[in-house]
Amino acid sequence: MDALKSAWQQLPGGEKQPQELRGMLQEGRHPVLRQLRRQVVIESFLFSAFLAVYYNMFDGHRRPLWVNALLVAGVLLVVLHGLMGYFNAKRPVKEAGLQQALAARLRQLRNFAGWSVALRVLGTACILLFFMYSITFTMEKEILLGWAALVLMVQFALLVMLWRRRIRRLGEALDELKG
Amino acid sequence: MNETEFLALITQHQGIIAKICRLYRDGKEDREDLFQEIVYQLWKSVPGYKGRAGFSTWLYRVALTTAIAAYRKKQPRIVYTATLPEQAASAENADQEQLLQALKRLNDGEKALITLYLEDLSYREIAAITGITESNVGVKLNRIKQKIAKIWTH
Image (cartoon, rainbow over all chains, first blue to last red; front, side, top):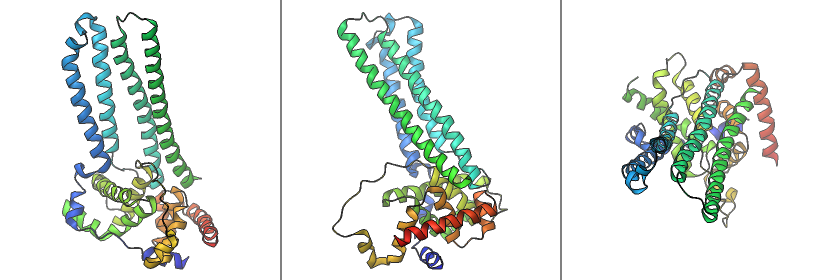
């Protein structure tokens, strides 16, 4: 073990200059936050543009108010989902020990995963309902809708699997420390 | 702690962060990303640092939490090269490369404990950082050492 310790302690360390380290304190340089922020900005811009034109372009005026409200709610839910992810990734480490900090992260991750899936499903359901309202269904349209539903279900299943994998991995690390 | 003081401490302790990144991530780009995430997370967590524990104790805790809990990209694609990794590394330092390969085969929790042990911290310090009891630290480290010895001999 002494040989291991010696090899470990001789591993080359970081050689970053204070200026480079100072840049890392900026949120814009954070690899995950930068990506999430870009996603939120793009989604917000595109959905705002969509909300500005949908009323005339997709016959919003021919649908009842509650259907229009559902569409707006659906769009807002998708944007809210992005924002929640962004703020969740920003949370600082507060707990006293590694085990407690990981347990707190696991709770936050489970909580956020639930919200993530629920917001995506609800948001998509609201948007779909808007477009399906007042459609006269024919066989072709039903088949098309069936395929769309299938694609969405696969997407949701993948989202659930992704979260489950992350939660399982973190849970395992915590168990390894505890057990 | 102001930004200048914080940066001076990070400059001094950046070797620890670099080693943790090497242990928890494979690709160079992933290691750089993790390094940035750790430094950012440390800065954001400064208000919670009361100074009761030493700076390095606090740094280990935040850095290891970030390394384990942060989002990871998919595992990098395996690239087959003409030279074996062991041979390629021999020019640099075969012992270090062999050590890293053995440590990378441990799970995330074990990696955290062995990192602290290899940094020459006492069982009491390791217990304070990890939040598990001193006796539990001893039991777990013995198991990990046996596991490494097994990997080493194969």
